[in-house]
Length: 87
Image: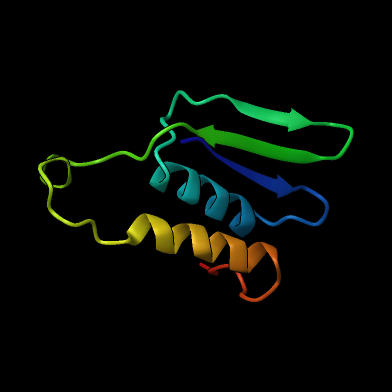
């Protein structure tokens, strides 16, 4: 299963970009994953092809849901229901 994450660059903040990168990594994107930039629509996107699993999860132990929480957080930020984390 592939997951496609995109960020509208109109008014995007560094926090928005950090949230996109965090969600992509949680969803299984590798550091070598290609980033697509659509200059016509000013969007940045990345695809994650399969979630990363640690050895205990691969052995059948239930996962913590951190990846799902990260994706939901990004969705909330991008839809305006939540403010991005500030440092």
